[in-house]
Amino acid sequence: MKRAVDIAGALTGLVLLGPVLLVIGLAVRLESPGPALHWSKRVGRGNRIFLMPKFRTMRVGTPDVATHLLTDAARWVTPLGAVLRRTSLDELPQLWSVLIGDMSLVGPRPALFNQDDLVALRTEAGVHRLRPGVTGWAQINGRDELPIPQKVALDAEYLQRRSLAFDIRILFATVRAAMTARGISH
Image (tube, rainbow, N blue to C red; front, side, top):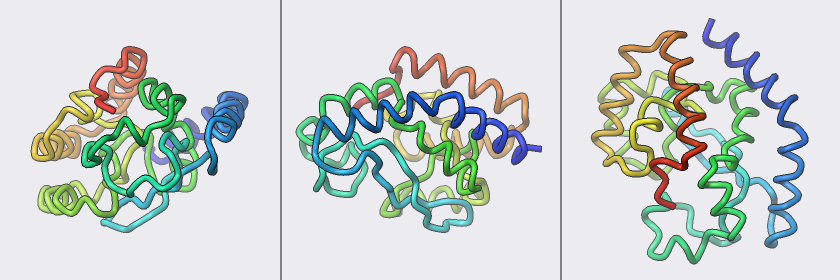
């Protein structure tokens, strides 16, 4: 059932938001040199690496690490990128990853390929068995502000509580959080 909801949601989102995606992609290309999309190496279900698309919010040549690990993150983020991050519009291309089965609409956010500490704790908690999500329980409960152990604890709680009703609750809370830019540090 979850996979059917993911496919229907991703298809609907891609069709309805298609014009918005095109405008954002064009704006990213016009603002700074480089591609509109950044394909980030992420850890998926079963700790398998996959490529996840996001609208590019950083300058070409930015080190491939979590934003909070950059010495001066503001130096790397483009002006449009800051807006896209604050509003979470940079995440919309991930609907493609949902459609092809690398991601789900709701699940733990996919770790970067080099976030070994996060991957190890998620594996220990059994969270690695889940398909990563565009949004998740940890996302709406602190996002960038959460230390890794707390993020994993929330991911493990999602693993135990997951249901269609819980996913719908998380999706609605995500829209609310995105509108207020709550929990975003970069």
